[in-house]
Length: 163
Image 1 (spheres, helix red, strand yellow):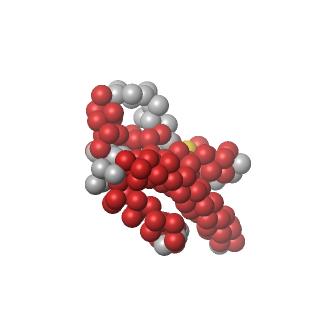
Image 2: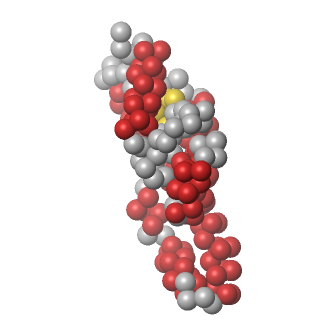
């Protein structure tokens, strides 16, 4: 899905604008700043909607095969509610495309999750944890993986998928 969106004709225009704006030409910086987020949001929402359709297909296949399934929406740096010094530093070095895309895609996922008992959101499991858990915007350190594994294990227990 992401690759399909990357092939969109406007993506080439955005890439060109980004390259030109890096040379300090103010009008291109402004155009890029206005146009890029619009494309990123549109692309992220379209990708999220396609992915939700794939989730439905996967769930149907599993139900027909008598397989239990739980979808888990992963946390990332941009779903974190707290502002910690180290996360602010990581956010600064992360692409603005990622932040905008997460902001557009996650509401689609969370809306779908709220309507499905075979899906859960782990997007906010680190909100009240004062520890460093991220290596970058998406990847967790060992402690973060431990928290996420515990969350998933607890969800499997609560869904009675393990005993």
